[in-house]
Image (tube, rainbow, N blue to C red; front, side, top):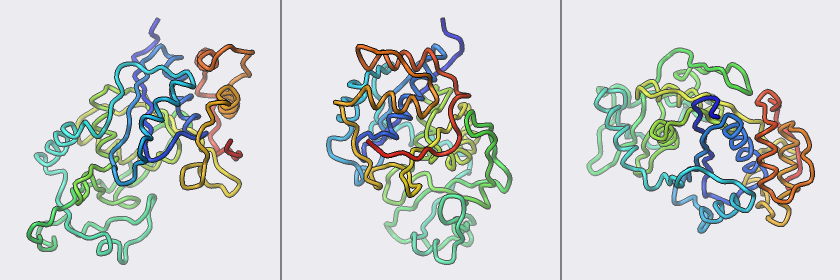
Length: 302
């Protein structure tokens, strides 16, 4: 019996192979969806070809299957959804909510102050009268105007979180000058198109949530319920990732690794099982978002 209208998703990026942090996010989002009798979708966030690892997308799918995950429907690939992003940007342009930016990164970052997620864009191109001359043949980036006011929400793990986008972020890019789509637009457009109601992901993306909520409001689409999971970090406090040399998941140790992330999420120890899928079923049956710790968890990646 479906307890609530729930559509969740797991959205890895094929810039590398899945690691222990990826497994924690996959298991938590899966268990949260299945515990609610909901749908769990899989989206491949392959927006940035220069950063992608050859063969990673297929390897991610094989790894998830080996760990017992079963998703609903076909895998969505962002690289095949550019028409969705074009339509979203067109709506924003028609409403005069975005503007072209011809600033080079060096030009706008010079003298800029640090904010919540890097340098804060100072609005150099926001006023058309003050915008630098458009160079012949130069493709602009497109930026979304942000309000000078608090954008906040109640996160299911972290609690209340807010930013003043004008102060903390600045007008942010939706499409880069090289023609590639920015993560913020793609994720909002996809969540809306796929009817996502709940987003369970790592706390490294918490800082992006107010931008996404503002963009959702600009597009007139619903805001999902967010739950930002604690990050798994190394002894130096760095998030386990490809950059911090997190090893790829070892398929020969599937049960050990699943039990490890279940323990990080404060799930009760599962009995002996015959297959990894049994552990996922156990996690869903005993899931409670209130069990999830807020603080980062220091661990050795294995």
